[in-house]
Image (tube, rainbow, N blue to C red; front, side, top):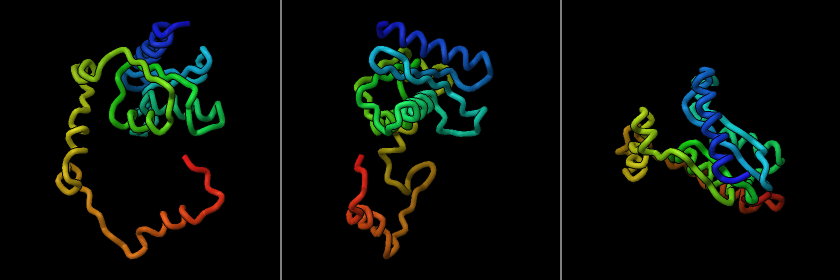
Length: 156
């Protein structure tokens, strides 16, 4: 199988998800050693989970299947260029490569415009559309100290 075959499967998943009423027009597959080990479709509206994007769902399924939290030796194929949330999840999962079919501009033209999120990231926290406020507590660094001191931690 080649990149086009895996991308076609991701696009098929996206279209099938729309036609089944599962969610938005997005699909993803994760491949290891030339075989699909996990798939994902956008099911935000049917699961009432705003993080249930195709890429995140596929990452969750792949990690569960492999019994790991990193996908070092895997490739992710997605029907569309990942949104900012999925981009973050992809970097945390660490696949070796990502291949996508449609661009974020194509998604925006279909009503899925995430450019405002990129703009929000660059704003000071309190100036964002949803304001963020830091409240410093005297113990606010204690979880990090506990992490540093914990001798049995599994770093990631």
